[in-house]
Image 1 (spheres, rainbow, N blue to C red):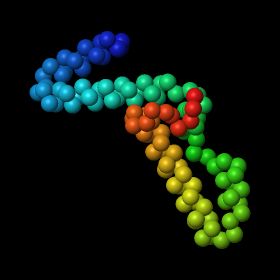
Image 2: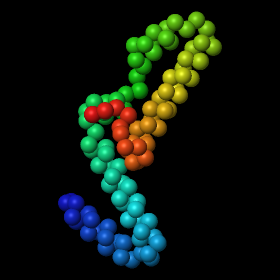
Image 3: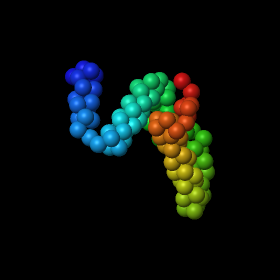
Image 4: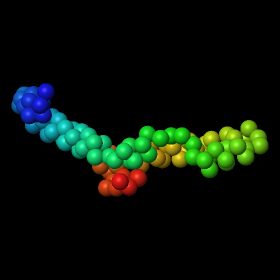
Length: 105
C-alpha cells in the first residue's frame, strides 16, 4: 500500500472525531512518524550500537577478576545500570527528547 493511500485512510478516520481527540490523534501520528524517521536514518554503526548488549573486553576482564559472589553481584549491577542508561539514551533520541544520537553517525 502506498503512503498516500495510508494517509487517506487515516485522515478519513480523523474526520469522525471530536476536535480534542482529533488533535491528540494527529499529535500521536506526528510523533510516530518522527520516531520512524529517526530509526530509518540510523546508520548501520548506530543500529549495531543500539542493539549490542554484549560485554566489552574490559568488562569481561573486570568480571573475570571478581573473587567473590559479592564482587560478581556488584559488577553485574554496574553492567545492568550501564545497559539501562544506554537504553534510556536511545529511547530519548528516538522519541525526540534529545537532538543527538548516543553514537554519532
